[in-house]
Amino acid sequence: MPLSPCRLPLIAAIAGLCLALPLPLAYDVAVAASPDREVATFARCEGTARVTCVVDGDTFWYRGLKIRIADINAPELGHPSCAYEAQLAETATRRLTDLLNAGPFTLAVEGRETDRYGRALRVVMRGGRSLGAVLEREGLAEHWQGRRGDWCAV
Image 1 (cartoon, helix red, strand yellow):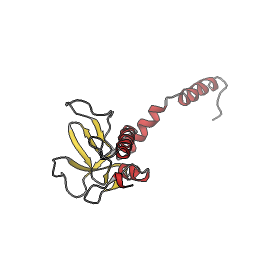
Image 2 (image 1 turned 180 degrees about the vertical axis):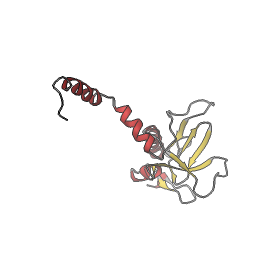
Image 3 (image 1 turned 30 degrees about the vertical axis):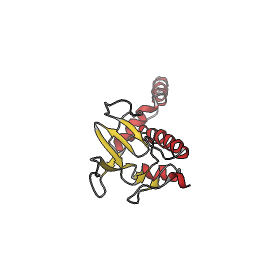
Image 4 (image 1 turned 90 degrees about the horizontal axis):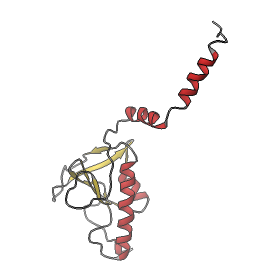
């Protein structure tokens, strides 16, 4: 059935409206299709009340649970052994904050559920890929080998 000239402006208006939809709607559709369901807004942890915030490059709080990223070791922000470790720890902390804020993620248990300090051990995933591995590739963390490395020996 051919389109009547009277309907063309209406069709053009609808098409224009669809093209003008904001990107967050498209993002919401992608989120709905993603298996990653955890979402929050993270900032640096400050003070004693910690609910959802980043401690350093491998530790963060999420909904009141303190989480140690299980597959990496990042430089110490609280007690660095040298100026290089302090600088690297600051960069790793900012980068982890950015990664967590970049969209939905999954917290996976691989091995033990908690460490000796009572922190939840989780691998943080997005789209089936480890965010810890991203920090490793960028030189801001090392793969966890059961002990901390020496960032000052570099």
